[in-house]
Length: 274
Image 1 (cartoon, rainbow, N blue to C red):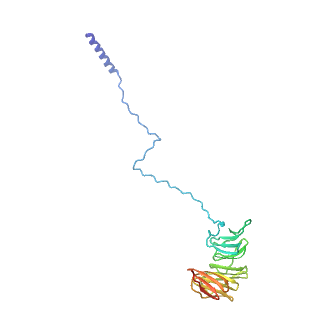
Image 2 (cartoon, one colour):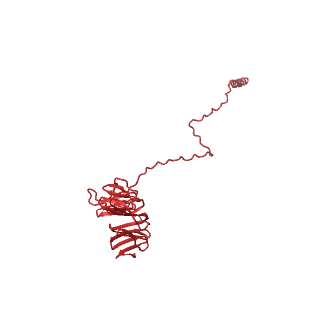
Image 3 (spheres, rainbow, N blue to C red):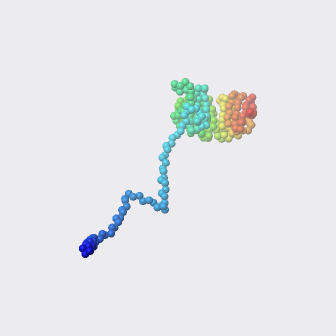
């Protein structure tokens, strides 16, 4: 029994000695976590949203649209046409358009073709008179132009007004009417102003020959040229647009609101339309 007790005592002392010599471990301090330089910081809920970027539109180059003359006359504006014969003619209009109706080389039939002559072209044409396959006179606002074999030139005039209609017999004889009752006569290579019985616009003229003709104006104005002077003729009121004389005893006037006047046996009478 004594031996057993001594053994237990030795074991107890051994354990106590081990505990006394065991070093004390210092507390472990956690290592700080460094932020990564590539880390993304999420914005807070109260952050102001950035406006969308402003887009600069790419400029679109512009160009002038032109009508294809092979498509006919329907794409042009305010055209005036005058034919020399069934195979040859001209048309002019807004934008200084000049079209020639002729048979191109190698073609079997005439077509309308765009023409750009040498010289200054008016911004707009208001009248046209053709008396040759490659020669005509035209009105460009307050100017009168002469076209001949691919060239167009401005002809001096004694007064600057809006010219509205022209008729030429040849390069030595012609007439022009326009605003403020203006009447011009072309003779001996120059335009001369002729006394007019009215001061309202004259919109159309038709000459049967150098000694006989008629002109119409707005608000029922009708003038007759005979025996070397222009005289006013009383006719039913109306806003007239155009006149065409067949001969000295037959002619027609048309206007707005279906107005039609017929000249027969020396008298102008209104026609009833159906």
